[in-house]
Image (cartoon, rainbow, N blue to C red):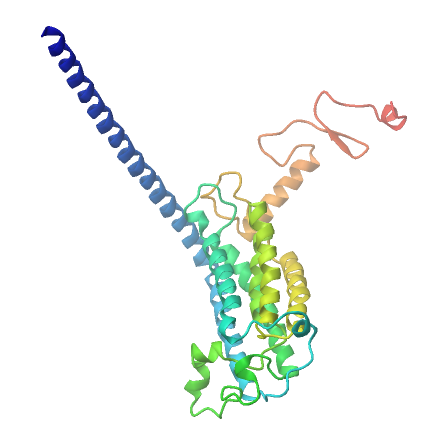
Amino acid sequence: MEVVVTLNTRKRRGRRRCRFTLVASRQRLVFSILWKGFELWKRICAETATELNLLTENWKYLLGGLVCQYIHGLAARGVHYIHRPGPTLQDVGFIVLPELGLDKAYISETLFSFIFLSFFLWTFHPFIFKSKKIYTVLVWCRVLAFLVASQILRVLTFYSTQLPGPNYHCREGSKLARLPPPNSAFEVFLLNFPRGVIYGCGDLIFSSHMIFTLVFVLTYQKYGTRRCIKQLAWLLAVIQSFLIVASRKHYTVDVVVAWYTVNLVVFFIDKKLPELPDRSGGASLLLPLTAKDKDGRTKEENHKLLNGNSGDPADWRQRTQVNGKILEDGNTVHADGAMNGA
């Protein structure tokens, strides 16, 4: 009888310990979630303050870029009024790639929407993740600069020569192939959104979808950190090119011209724009230097280098230069010995 009582007592104690352990683990889990949420909120607030400071300095560039996006849409709407449908031109891409058909034309738009949304979310990752390399405001200033320059060339091109649209709603017999004269200015300036944007005709050379896709991919190629995502982005850009031609939204020349034009535009404009400050060192709350501070700092670093010191204030050791190589203290080499190969 005493043995049974002892066993029951041990079982009760074991159950109490299990309950206590379970409650304690739940409390630790809740505390951990709350702490992570608090850290995330602090990170979002700090990043928001930083980006707002940058926004106050660069809002004109962002606003100008957005206005140019509207002007580009207005130009594309305007060319639709002078579009004249005709027989589809002979195209190598149309011969090689099978036609998707009107019921599958959404595939290319779905892929483009995925690329656009993915890039948009990536530009805001500094608000969430600790490891960050970019400032959201500054990245969008560069992206809009690339887009505006490419779109200016695009508008000049499709207004120079109007080709008969290969898309289904732009072909002969379609009611949407030609636009009647506008009844009012509001019909033009409001772009008949979104129908006027989706069913546009005449704005062919070169592809606007490829402008956005290539600008996004090239930007991530430079500032992204995941190699596998970079490779995937280029693969999606190639697939997007084929889908645009297969869905008969553009001629092959529209896509080909976009590939080399956008790459050249980004290459030359990227050289003219000031480089983004590097955030990989962990200084996530530091704002980029102004032009005045940057000039003063450059002069100070050059003065230190001329005096034989590094530009880094923490490294003021004397250096000796031999045959174009800068040596640390204690590694001085005689010039004669270095010239003789000793």
